[in-house]
Length: 261
Image (cartoon, rainbow, N blue to C red; front, top):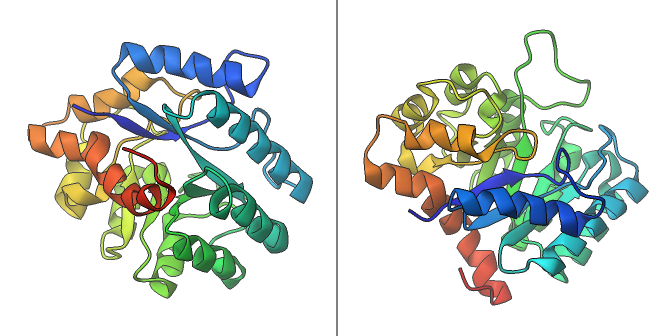
């Protein structure tokens, strides 16, 4: 089976440079037959990055992509707290650069309409849109989105596909939250490799709305792959989840950029 990993970072990995860290990730990916990694955010994060932080972290990802252009895809790190700089980064890294997606983390909840210019421009560029989400038992960070926030955003852009990062962490709640909003996809990355997560996602969302990701280097490729490879679903469903669903979302921008996949 082809495997594309939707959800990888340069943090939590050995290496003093972005290039070295992506190389380290690829060393382990090769052991497990993972063909491509989607990477976003730099070597040191902040929950509410300044405009300069966004540029620095995106520069680090660009360096890593330049070293391994045939093994990784880059998503530009943006923040609705800094819409003007985020729009500039979209142009620099996606419209005029090699990146193919957008990563939104925890600085500002995505239900707020100030994020809309970012989403509209990303959609114009056919970039894949990824929003971190979580349902935390002890309360979310101030700017951290839940799947419910993402549903509110997705309703404003019903024709734009978006990915629900971590499926909300508490995946039983997250799957139910996004179920009716058919332009939302579930990212399997990041929660513990509990039995049943993939089966429930397939049952409630349909196979074509479920995508494998690992959250490496914060989590291991092997345990996260186990959620899919060990799931009680058809082999054809596993092929879709491990690569083909993500590849289908990416194909428009990949073709526009002349990237073979």
